[in-house]
Structure formats: structure tokens, C-alpha cells
Length: 415
Picture 1: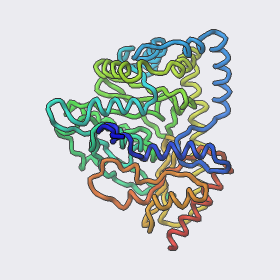
Picture 2 (picture 1 turned 180 degrees about the vertical axis):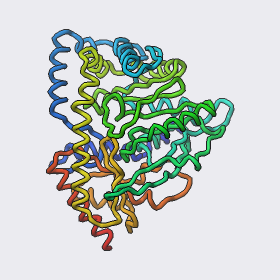
Picture 3 (picture 1 turned 120 degrees about the horizontal axis):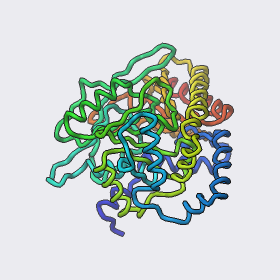
Picture 4 (picture 1 turned 135 degrees about the vertical axis):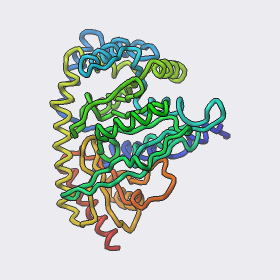
């Protein structure tokens, strides 16, 4: 069978496909220790809430209506309007329903956005998305219909006390010219848990405005929901910002609901693309989220339940890792948000792809760091020395997994 150019591009086995395969296989494999994929934690309070909400929505007809009807290609009207009102009232943003579109998950949203802006242009030129620092989210890497649509820069690394470190944008390196279609960064960052400071965000916004390109902020873990963000920073949006959110990390990954907050031109484009590619986005997730807004629970649960749960889990995971791995070459990125820890094994004599294979053979699933260094024009040893570890498993499973990681890292250093 002969595939098209598009077919050949998207038929390849990518890092994000491997990650999701591992997640699926691990869920079906008894005893597997799932420290890899991005499934959110099964927080008992949130599961109870969704159970109760389902009962209420089933009783009043909202759930059946969401299952039995299409929404428009922009997404569920009631939720879009409620969300715009929430942002106006909470942050004073100049925003209305014309600034919000929904997608079938944020991964779909980024596929739309990257190909809307980057790649081959109508005038024959080729433009790229600038990632201000690498590592960055694995799911971006293969999202371009055209090849080579990303360029990224190595960060400044600040060594902190207690075996921690932090990445910062190196603004002296950044080059923004006519070849750049947009600037994009996740905040908090998947995979590292890094949170760009308010100063860094304002500098990136200034750069974007100077060059008449949008600033895309991946806010899947950020403010105001699900609020898995531990740093003291402010939310950010203006009419030159494309703010992308999700319901997944509230605990609803299966409903596949992404949210894109942007100017009216972007909203119109996303709506048109939805209509062509999928008719309409899913209705079930927006119905749940609208229910949460009407009850006044969306921000409350994010702040009082979700954030403290993950913050406690992150600190516990750091404690377990530092107890198990005492080699002074081991450092952890300061956990400032998201649901992962970023582990750095300096001078590791094997790649983390090899370490990943050794760990997988022992039933521990993590994600090798190489996949996250998207758009790098030069090789970097650091890219082969890092792992992403999901810390949402229960304490017993996490301890077992960390013990095996410590053993394999010690063998690698000794070898």
C-alpha cells in the first residue's frame, strides 16, 4: 500500500506514541510500576465529586443531552460563555465567548495551532515555532504536517541547594526573525515541573509583540484550573496570547477537552478547522466543567483539593529519590508544578534511552529525556542524562519503582 506524504509522516512511530503505548500496556500489566505516562492521579475526593456530579447531571438530563447531541464546531455554548465570564470576574480579562474555542483534547488543539501558523507559507517561505527553552513537551515534536517546524534553545541551569536545580530562559541566545511564526512554552513545563517566572513571561510577550507573532502558553497544569502550580506567579493572557488549557488534569482525561483562549481571528480559524476535521468537539467534558462552574466548584476544588494533593506527592517523591540515590551527580529539577519530576544524572555513561530499556525490563515505566529536546540544532550531553518521572502513584508503588531506578543507575555508573 502506498501512503501519501501526509500518511508517511504520521505513520511513523513517535515518542508520544511510545509514551501512550507504555501507558496502555502498563495499565493492563499486573505489577507494572507506572512512573511514565501522564495519567492524572485518582484523587478520592475528585472521584467522589465526579460520581455525584454524574448522578445530578443524569437526573436533570444534562448528561444525556451531552451524549445525544452535537455541539457547534466552536464547542458547547453554555460552557464557553460561563468560562469567559469566570475569567472576566476572576482576572478582569477583556474576554468574551468569541475568544474561546474547544478541541478534542489539547493535543488536537496544538496540532491545529502549529499547522495554522508554522510550516510552508502561502508565499513559499517556511516558518517555525520557537520554543524558548528545551526540554519541552514531548507531544509537540511530531505535530507538524511539514518537517522541521521547531527551533529551541538550551536553558541556563541554576544549581540550587539540596540537590535541586532550575532551568531559566537564556534571552541572550533567543533569535526572533521573519522565520519565526510563534513563540510557545508550557507553564508549568511538562516534563520538568519548571514554571517560567512572571518576568520571563513578560519578556516573551514583549518579544512576540515586537515581531507581530503570537505567544502560545500551554497552561494544561496551570492557573486557575487545575492549579497544579506551586510557584508564586500570576496567570497571563492578552489579545496576542494564545492560552491553551485542558480538563485532563482535573481528573477527566477521558473526556478529551482542550480549551484555546485567543483573539477572534484564532477562534474563528479553530472553529473552522473543528468543523472540517471533527464536525464538533466532544460535549461531555464541557458539560461536566459547566456544571462545576455553575456550582462554584471548579476553582475551589482546584485550589483546595488538587493543588495540595500534588504538592504533597511531589515533596514525598523528592524525599524518596534523595534517600535512594545519594550520588552527588544526581539532581532533581525544583518541583514547581505539573505531575512529573525531572531527574538529571550528570556524567551518566549510558543514555537514558538505554536506562529506559533496562527499567522497562524490570517492570518500571518512565520516559527517557531524549524525546523532550525538540528543535535542537546541536547535540547536547545533558539531553541524554535526564528522565521524566510521574509521581502520582501510591507511596508503596513509588518506593518500589524508585528503588529499582536507584539500582539501575548505580549499575550504570559502576559500569
